[in-house]
Image (cartoon, rainbow, N blue to C red; front, top):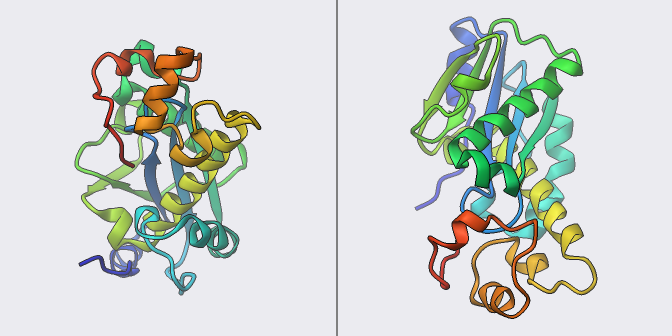
Length: 218
């Protein structure tokens, strides 16, 4: 059963000397259209987080949207980085995740957030951030961190709402490919629209050769 996140890990890191903890999560990895987005959220103390905060996949779109404001009040900073469908086609998804993460961290630096002594909590099992961060940061890869760690859940929610907004805007009034609802994932209606209208520059064309018409997911 899903569990609510805590600040247990964040408190351990602060107790061990971390000056700030940065949560990192990605959204859009499995889509066939649109960018992949990496969200980062930064805290400097383990204070109570907004009620109802959870991994973005475990809460409704309405709840996610309602949480963004409280999350932004809770964290010191939250930034998003993107890598486009064209970049994913050219460089592959892992390199594109690295690029998107690098861009999110660059925004933190541009906004003059001091990252000296930071510890990064990266959701997953593979450190795709490491190659892209200069100077190097202390990155801790943790499976299900978006479910268990509040700072990562915050990044997850902000990134999901941000990317969903991009897809709705790109859909426009006609919404030929159903992006306002499928958010670029491979629903049957999305594949049917591709068969009827062809692909757009917003599609990941290399992925369309390898996914099945019933592919979908977060």
